[in-house]
Length: 225
Image (cartoon, rainbow, N blue to C red; front, side):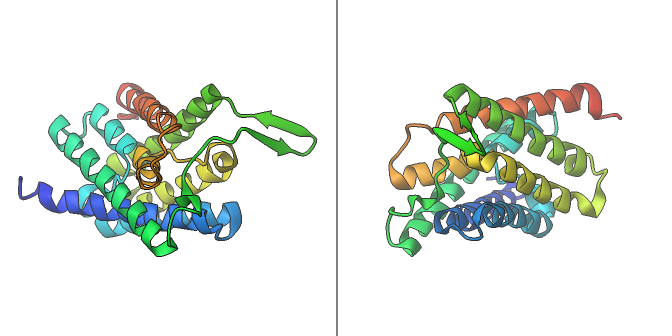
């Protein structure tokens, strides 16, 4: 393994582990309601951007890695390695969470689309198609922020804050509808720990679609702006 790649892969594994252990853990425990869960995810990302950003870029999300690769900012081999280690980190994080919580009764913070959501006098039905589109849109926002704030270097030392807060805001909006994963590794980890893969494809297809659109927009329009 390339010497320069080794610390980056370890950073991606540890960062993704932390995101699932803390973020999904907060969701499993109901810590602070929706706001608490959103902040748990956002603060993990913010913290690890500053801890590991200089080592790996702190993608800790296969969708982010796909976006960075399609934007022409990393080669395919490195991107594939990142994704493998992110998924491993996500699974290990969920398994550790299962051990700490004493089993699977809490659901381990698994992301699942709501069948319906009551908002005042209105009931919102969450179809499979709607779930995929929502995950795609919210992931687009996250990857767009990563590319324009961090990869471009234009946000400087504030990039970590921008990325962490973007994830927090996305979860505040999408959490009640889909769980707002925006991250295949975030969903794969609990799915493996629970042995429940029924809705997992939503949380792979949606985020990857959003990442592709963000990368195309960055490369075609925003990179030189």
